[in-house]
Length: 324
Length: 209
Image 1: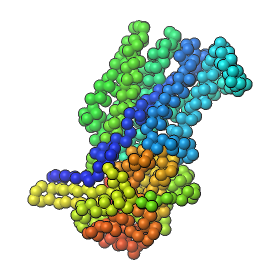
Image 2: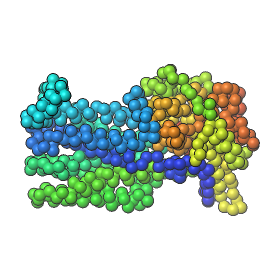
Image 3: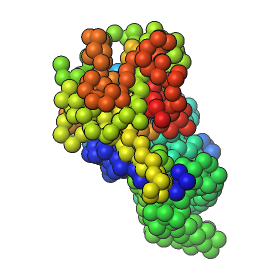
């Protein structure tokens, strides 16, 4: 009888909290997207060099670590814009809170820069180094630059591994940031960490393909991308299975994504446009040895951003309040 | 003072050291004091005096509230049952907001009250997103704000403002570690519940049913 009807009148009307959470706007999904992209752009060239043993030939791959640092800086700008107490931004670096994924993330962000800069210096050609040294000479930084270039060459292999590890940490943390929040059933899954990492790898590969690689590198990156997209589809499947077989809040999250209010953007933008179509196009390109269509990486990038936007918005809308 | 607790700045508080944070949660029950609030839903008439008292005492800005009323009606007419609840931050024994805070601004104060040190808050809003009760809000001045259990009044030997003004005496505040306190006696003698126990946060606001 008690379940016959339930009417709840909620007397709280806090801005950005009620009727559903809206505290995080466009800045956070953009940051998560750029963070994943920076991770992918850092990991992929490093892994390719580690596996092949030869330095990259194309400019895009050689300069990828610089691009990674630039993308991350752009993402951090978005993150800064989100802070409502901007003057206190330095507080992130006066503490390390082991239970806070955001604290881990803020320190990982700092680790990316030295690794990316040293990897980037190591990837410069002799001509580029000469030009850079000449510029450094004008501001009396020649000896420092010489020292850094020496270290970058001597420690090339450990630095490549450091790039892979730090990049993976960056990519996974962006997912764990959301996944660790039990208060939001739509986010509360450990799958989000690896999902955001593979998505970052895929979007990173897509960006490198757009910038232009040589024939051999392009084939390798397209194959990497196919693997990342397949892994991403599997992880999305596992995420949905986890939701469907969980408690009532998880089942509600499953409904939200698969047939509820977020189903249309999830299926159309994330699964079909961002994963299904690019996978089919890349499979055909590999099998038929066709030249790469520029459309494919663009779709992958749209899908990567859509994944973050859809999960961010749907996650904030999911709450225990739906289950009085 | 307008309700803002100025926590001590030393590193001795349990919530401020990441190594001690899990210990802080585990030892919350063993503290000298464990503050709790008990709301008698059978006496509450949803008059909102508690909401107004809090806004005045703590200078809560327009458009926000640290406590609020929820009215639930179940059944079919004429067989209806109603429950009025005066709700606020649950000052959980295992607060996910404290765990999520990257700067240590959210911390567990003496007596188990969960507070925010405004000076340390960056307004990243991770604590807001991690609270299953949506009890926090971004203050227009930038920091994140919430119920403090009126600790500034409690430390001066007074009751929280909402408890003080309640005309039906449905709100009770006290120390659960004292078996003779009013809250302990009420929870021993009456059936009670907490909101969403499935979250595992172990709230310290109880509702007599």
